[in-house]
Figure (cartoon, rainbow, N blue to C red):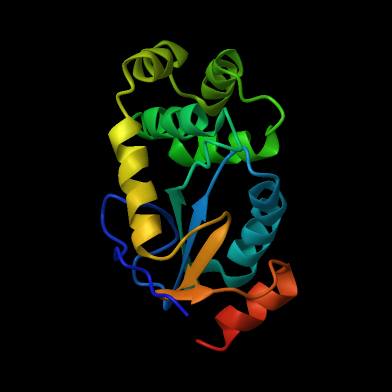
Length: 173
């Protein structure tokens, strides 16, 4: 079992309190159908555990298989720079079938971000380094596919359903 090589820090996108007894880290790809399947599972687990869980998302775009994944990750980061990361993250997973650059700008506006700023970030690749940093951290942690989960720093390779993930987290509490 591999361990998380890059500890969760203040620059991570996290939902839930830093003081939570359990931190769930996902390395994900917005265009990956398996990540799309895992998205409602993670949301359900977040609701079930409430303030006992902190969820962290890190980008791991598999660009060879998913041509829109890199720009989707950059768009999420651009929205994040405007304080709208989670709104954009959620929209990208609920609209995985619409991830062209034009779609990303529509999603940015729906998320409450400035689409012109997101467009400018995409054109200039302003957030590409952030996405690459997440990706490299994933590789160092043994990630070779998405979604990949870590619970309190330990790789979770169990089933990606609510019951299994809940059970794995509950054993820590």
